[in-house]
Amino acid sequence: MTHDEILSVLGPVDDELVADLMATGASGEELREAWNWLHNDEALMGQGRPLPGSRVAELIDLLEADDEEA
Image (tube, rainbow, N blue to C red; front, side, top):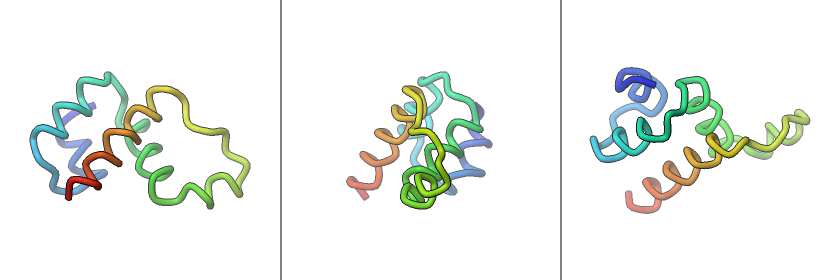
């Protein structure tokens, strides 16, 4: 996942979060999935989507921690 992919999904974020997200080795698609789970979990479960995998869950944890700091 690239810096530009992260910004296209999340908008402006600090460089530390960008580095943490890139260090996971996740793809841009996994980041989009994590963002969707974080903001629409009830809708995704209602669609019968499986719970996020371990890498997506790691991204969710990083994004949640960043939201709590903001």
